[in-house]
Image (cartoon, rainbow, N blue to C red; front, side):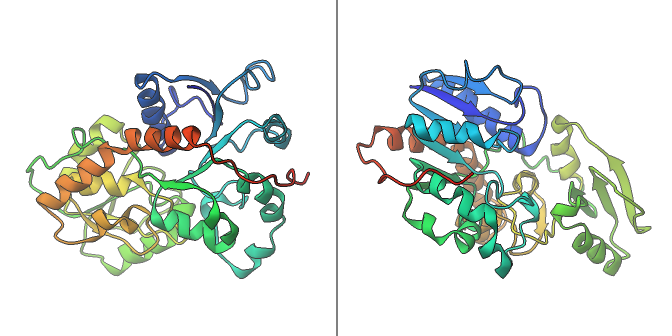
Length: 312
């Protein structure tokens, strides 16, 4: 199949959770024989974006003008939405508050017609989908797939090293629950905590700040700690750091707002042995499951009903 892939960033060169995920799926699609063109806001438009294609995969695409999506809809191009957060129904994305007032948000009505006409909606976890449906229950009737973030079990595994203390990775970003994490650290003053990623201000005395760590060094760093601390304050779609640390042998200190832990294969005890092997298998299968869902959706002869073009 010939496909157009919309993304804000060139995930072949950018480093981030969404970019790691898109890169894995993109490469898997090429290996399955698909002709995929990556379109970013810097790509010449409309020549490439609106070239003939069997479908458009919309990933992180916040920077694209709404007219781009309207044009695809008018062309009758099948749309596959691959949600990484809460775009386009919430301008706060990972700060999504799930408040009652969200139901009256102008973005909900603006984007609803386009979302309802999608050929396929892809979410990263059961929690991710249920959080969306709490605001847009109409999407329950649209074909969907739940695909976890791909994490390679050959890169994250137990090295059998001596372990001590707690590690937190990118959890001090405001949208990742900074206040919750700092509260936990303050309440456990005897627990040494290694802080990886953005600092963003003073830390309690039991913290050691190491800053950004290259991705290929994370497995060893996880392996030197007993637990990963991650306490978001809004529903996270997946949070691959939780999956990485889990596969590396860490116990997870978290809450019900982590998408990864809403998957049954993560949630059930025991936390070791066969359970970790099952998690590794499920996450490694994600790219092929992604493409199976896309291929099945595009092979289907079923078409969504005619719906109004989304509002300006």
